[in-house]
Length: 79
Image 1 (tube, rainbow, N blue to C red):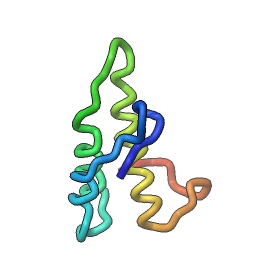
Image 2: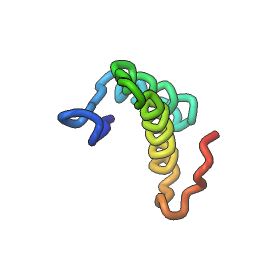
Image 3: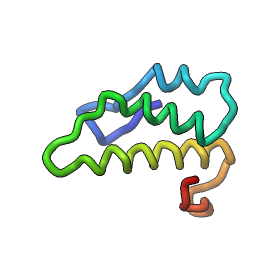
């Protein structure tokens, strides 16, 4: 798992990948993986909200991928 555009190079977490391996495709597992991916994220003056945005984007992307749902047809609410 990796995020692009948030650091000088893609931000990858092997720990998050390992946490998902062999697990059921559930929001709970995706949430845990997102937390692991973002555990080293730091905020600056007025950008703290971006970490929560990234967390939500990670979970939504994993839910969409697991259900093979194109973004244009996806339900935008995260449980």
